[in-house]
Length: 232
Length: 215
Image (tube, rainbow over all chains, first blue to last red; front, side):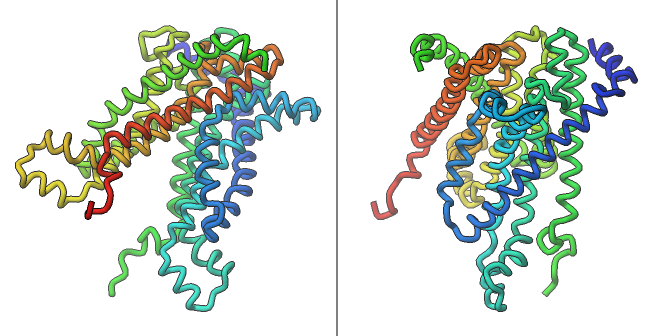
């Protein structure tokens, strides 16, 4: 069985063309990054605002918990029946899948952004105010950089979930690596299914590791201690 | 919602199957994560390996894991046991870090007092360290429970029946009722797990409710 999977993956014909692995890989990343960007545009400002003002804290904690409990597959089908008749062409399929991925990505990013700002040391905030900074300046120059590690780890875990869940877009007939899983299951082509599963897992791991490197390089050296300890 | 009235017994049995597939791995995962987390909290060298290694398991997409497990296990692809094993893996992935951090947060002074009172290692772990780590572990367990309930529904794509079966059933017939019932039932089941874990936590940590020292 393992040999048949290796043979499937090693077959050059499976990598090329409109339904080849490379094309599916690109589609998969397109779905995932689009959803992630939309989710980040909604969740980061909202999280920063809630963390900065302390308003709506209760709402966030509970909404994030409830959103995690919603099964993605069920939401996908519901969104499809709701949106598909109102749209036409490929958008009728892309919109429901996108909606599900955005809903999935918002909770981790939101709670990262909110927890990051809320966890900023009051002394740092006071010092900024003492230096004459106004609310938005405190936010931009102090709270945002200090909250960056948690914001990034929120985005990272959202990325991971979105890449994993983008596979189910294939049940609506869309592309992405999920195609190999769904088509393989439907035609009982087990090597194809297993190859698809391996590809998704490898993609998730690779993106996660790449993100870990980015995370390390963009966080302020003052927070990670990369400049070494300051001697007094 | 006449559909729900007519199919209430079916939905209930699917919910039972769902609770079994999500709940049993929660217990098994905790039993596996406890020794691993303990090891990680004790051993500075092992800590990063255990935390990263188990964390990596969580990056495997659920549908991919459901499909790959029959390759490595003696079960057929449609066997629900694959789902049990997959969910146990996810539970362990989430809990090892929680257990390690929970045990690591027990104050040294408490451990030293216990040792001074003559507690041997195992007894100290069972009656001092573990109980004090319960609130942290229970927080991790709640996250794992909610995520398990949601992930199990994907197993319908490999033909294992549980509440997720209502999704594929409704989709194939272009009929909304089963899908809505399935989603609501999943959320309710997650809530039920959450409340159950909270209640057990309350029961085993009576000191958290004790009043001020004057009482």
